[in-house]
Image (tube, rainbow, N blue to C red; front, side):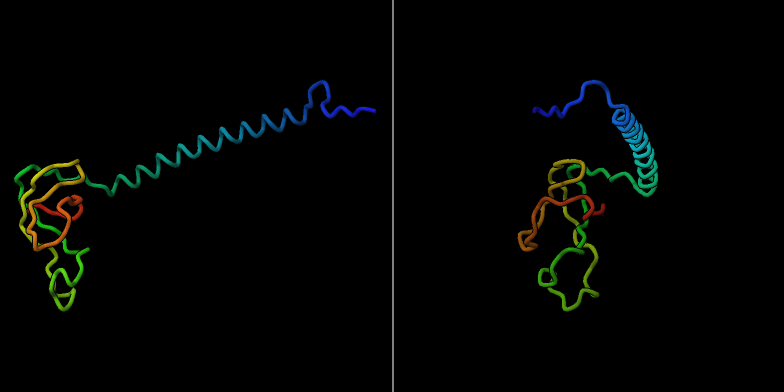
Length: 119
């Protein structure tokens, strides 16, 4: 006695289920695209264009992420917010620049533009 699992012919319930799932998938995809556009619009409202730097520009470096030992201050409250000015030596990308820093500063020469401001 052999048992055949696959039935010949079409199962209407299964086809309806597949069609319904495809329709739900399309609806979800359309909704996600719409929400992505809305979120991008809201986010871009608060964004500003990055300032462009050129070789030779003088900039100040933010001390926000520096260690207190590096700044040689007793309290963070009394440290300067920015130090410098330093010259832009090379533009690596629109978000990253290389600076001419003092050896005593002991930080990496390549800095993100979020950490610098024009002098």
